[in-house]
Each structure stands twice: as C-alpha cells, then as structure tokens.
Image (cartoon, rainbow, N blue to C red; front, side, top):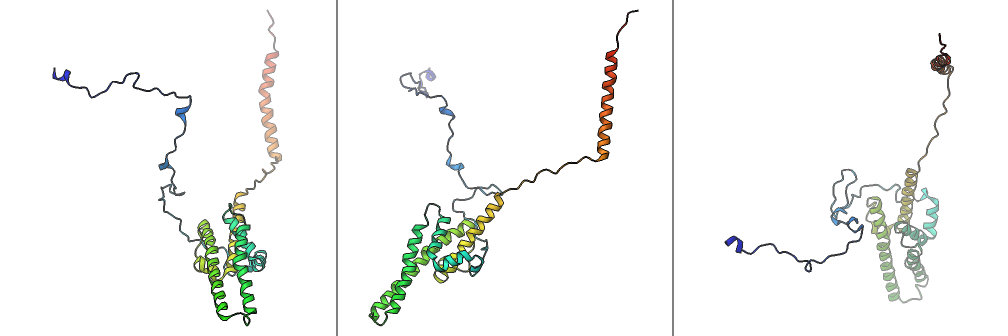
Length: 245
C-alpha cells in the first residue's frame, strides 16, 4: 500500500500540454555548424593548433636590402615615384585596398615633407630660426610616422611569407632605408608570385610513338595464322553433310 500510494516521479503529459511542431521535409538533414571542429591543424601531423599559434618567421628574403639593381623597373619607380611603388605593394598585400589610397598618403607625407624641407633650406635666411626649428621637428615627426605606417605593411608581408626581420626591425628599416625597403618588398612579392605560377602550371608530354619491329610483325602474323587455323577447321566441319545409308 505504501508503494501504491507513493507519488510517481514521472509526469504524464496530456495531448494539450505537449505542443506539436510542424517539421518540413528535409529539415532534420541540415548540416550543423560545430565551432569546436573549426580549428587550425598542422598540415604534417594534423594536430590541433592553439588559437595564439603563429608559424615561426625563419625564412630568408630572396633578395638583399641593397639588391635594387636586380629589378631595374622597380628601382626606377622607387627612386622617382616611391609613392606609386608603395601603393602597388600595399595593394598586393591587401587586395581590398586600392593602390591610390596609400599612394596619396605616401605622397603627402614623404614627397610633401621633402618639398617643405627643400623650401625651408632654400629660404633659411628669410625665415625665423625658431620657425625653422619647428618645421624641422614637424618633418622628423612626419618621417617617423611614415616609417611606422609603411613598416606595418612590411610586417604583414613578413607574416604572409614567414620572413625574418632583416636587416633589423620593420619600422627601423623604413625609417633608415625607406627606398631600398620598398624595392626589396616589391621584388619579394614578385618572386613569390612567379614561384606560385611555376608550381601551378603543369606540362603534359604526349605519349611516345610506338613502332613495330620486323620480328614483332612476324610474331603477330604467326599468332594470327595460328588463331585462324581452328576457325578454318571448324568451318570445314560445318561444311560436312550427313548422307543417309
């Protein structure tokens, strides 16, 4: 009696308590996105890599910082129009940024600063010394900011191709060797693109022409004659007629 009077742990749902949902055909067969499976893995051992993992930057640059003469076209562009070369480099690293935006920014900061420095030096006798000092300080600050700005894109290029900090930090390279750094970055991307095109293009050679020797022809003719002899014998047997006695 005690067992029968004890309250049951299960609740019986009535029809009006259990809502019925309409399920369209194919709704249960949809793919499910599992965030735990969308992780980076090592290409060699297929082990899961942590989120903060970055591949080591141990690759050397294909050309040196002073090897500007290896590519005369980029050398001329970097010497006379460094803003254009900088814009092309940024567009190659970041495809969503058109080359005109970094080109204009570079022209205002670098080429404009050089023009202002030349005018200040030319009219140094007519300008107040304190004003000259302020202009020089502003030019040094603008040059430092331009080195940081262009060094960030050099850092992205190093991460993309796992390159070392050579010959020194990316920002210091642009502050001290700006024109040489622009030419080196352009050559690096050009070399990597040429290597990718060479690896992606495959050549297929046509099959060699097969010629039959005289001995092979004799063997083939003998085999064909031997194969035809049973058929001829069979035809002779088929030609026989039964004559009643």
